[in-house]
Amino acid sequence: MSLSNHTKPGYFQVRFRLYSKNQYAMKYQFAILFASISVHLSAQELPYAQIPDYPLDFNAETTVARMVDGLGFRYYWATDGLRPEDLKSQPSDEARTSRETLEHIHGLSHFLLCTMRQEVQSSVDVSAMTFDELRKSTLLNIKESSEVLKSGQVTLSELFIEFEGSDNVFPFWNQINGPIADALWHVGQVVTFRRSSGNPFNSNVSVFNGKLRN
Image 1 (cartoon, one colour):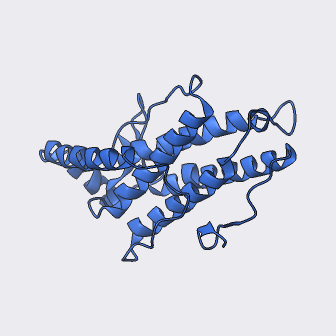
Image 2 (cartoon, one colour):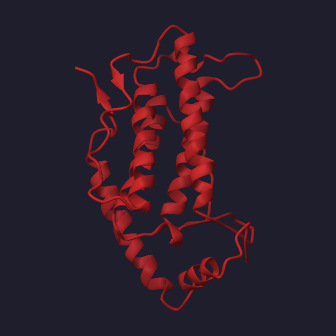
């Protein structure tokens, strides 16, 4: 097993701990955490109509959680009220449609969630999902990832990216400059596409304050 681009002993020590004799206890603790978060989320309306309250503490995990919450808020309003004709919109024949872009964003949210769950990366076929199902699943993926980061039960140094059939292991740094940044990029594309199809982003949304303006 190799840790791509990172050879500092600390990373290998952390990785070793994850696969030590205590790994089963850790996995059990994480399973309980994810089960409780999932039950809580399934009982709620769609998250991110308003950004959650600030975390109580500044640390690496809550800072990333705030970035993820910002993604959730932007995604919620970028996709709010999209029509069938908006989903088919594309800037050129070679570009993705809005629907295809949303499917890609869902894949990025699932990529992040796999790391939060300490699972090997896997793919999800969303082609048969309705738009509403796709939107809900994406928002819940984002919310669960944020809740794990704010739980106080994980540290970023314990979270790794693994791919099936590969010995390469990537640290959480790659989540920040990879899927999280990429998802924000593509949410902006959805906003642009919907403006082009005559259904612009709600002008009352304040991304600075994380809520609708009065």
